[in-house]
Image 1 (cartoon, rainbow, N blue to C red):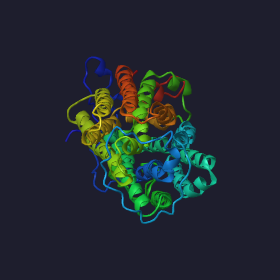
Image 2: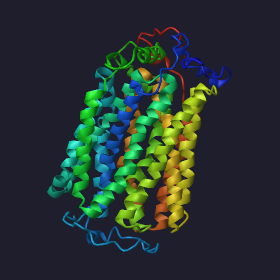
Image 3: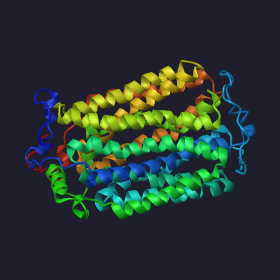
Image 4: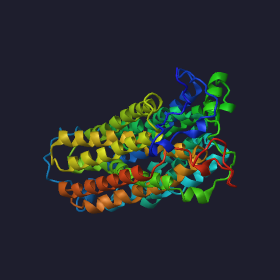
Length: 500
């Protein structure tokens, strides 16, 4: 069996620089078994954590449809008449005790976007704290805080728009540390040739959380009322936190049940990849062009992702005219495809590197191009097929599904170029990538005052153009090898075996 830590990249041309050189002098241990391993158990618990995280994030998108008095928003947020009503008549709700609020379209946009005002603040601090103290507690308490605040959503809505906006911003503060914390943990847990698999498994929980929470939120709204949406997911978040604190450790060295063989495999594969310095080399980090390539790609991808995540239920209801039950189910279908694609692409990416001798840089470029240009094409197509409901859902599903390739593209490139500072780097890129979540839905709302198909075509075309630009920029300037500044002692001395 070929060593999992062998040099895998081609030796000629530009790709020749991407040789994962830091692995050449490390002990060449055979890969530890996957079944019941500590690293894959961590991936599964992280999967569950991000499942909960996105369920807590997106449930408001569906619940808001039921929270707002439709009569009060008819003037400025009316359903388009271009598409014929095709849904079956909605049965009388079993429980209509949930209050309705007089919130116009602009107010709803601010409510949906307020989460990101907190989310953007804690990205870089979260990555820095994780690099100093570890990611376990940071990730755990980040999700716990979000879950607890979610339980208070009905109360905040009763107190007024200001209170609800403030509460959502606080939830964003808690969630802001989670991705940098997880990246920081994987820098100690993920062998280089298993990064795509492990990270795609853990982060795929976000997509499945979206898949489950959107239709489930619609069902809860239909049979009970919207307040129970927040109570249910808040309690699930607290249960996950208890399991996380009990079963997880920051590093393989501190894990109580990991086998000595697996521990040695992980540590040997990461030898000479991690810097001995705890302080972050901020100047080299900010001057790194490969980092800015990730920033641009991350920003571009999230423009489309967040626009659809927050406004797809609205598009389904007001343009395609699905009722709230169908809305939740059909809004979730695209994210099921993305979840499946993330899992499969993670396996494919590592196989291309380990078995087919593809360089890390080649794989990251290829998967980013597929995961950004593919969605752009089908997103534009979805806007130009009119009221063909089947094709609209199909194209939106394909668009979001193909986006799953990015999980093995730019999304984990931080660990390729600077594993010691992966949490900090993700904090930086996610700070920029949060901006679309703040302004994207507001811009989309302003471009769709009448909710006509032509207006939504503009929204989709803008998102597609931004996606294509991000893919091209990343392809031109990305790198796949550990950067010199990421392993130096900050005085210019490099770890033996590195290259520029």
